[in-house]
Length: 137
Image 1: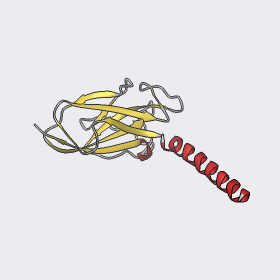
Image 2: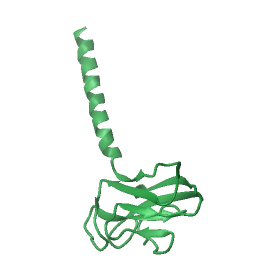
Image 3: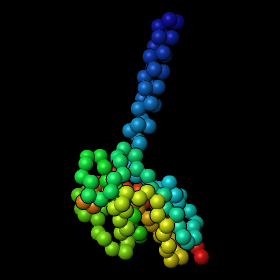
Image 4: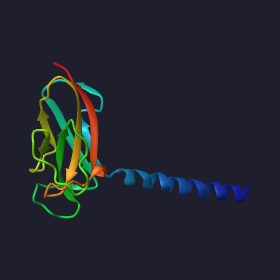
């Protein structure tokens, strides 16, 4: 009985350590605090952006572990190392912003959040998040 108790105790300890380590590993990347994926929204749309595992800094800051957000409307992630275009569908938050008010025409849209370095070079799909929203009048 003593052997069974010791074995079970070790197994539970190992399981607890794994469970504690997993959230830390999963806490790296970007995401939308708002809106939620699949949300029905109206204009103006409040976009709240978050990042875990790096620090938000203004464009031009070239320190390891830093970058800033880009919002891509109706497009997907940008490949790692590519410079994110500056046009109507790629919104740059070079000031280090983490929130934005957006207006879109009615209908279904995708929003992709892409994190990039101080020179707007993408950190790639691992540092992106895409949601779908339905804009109603």
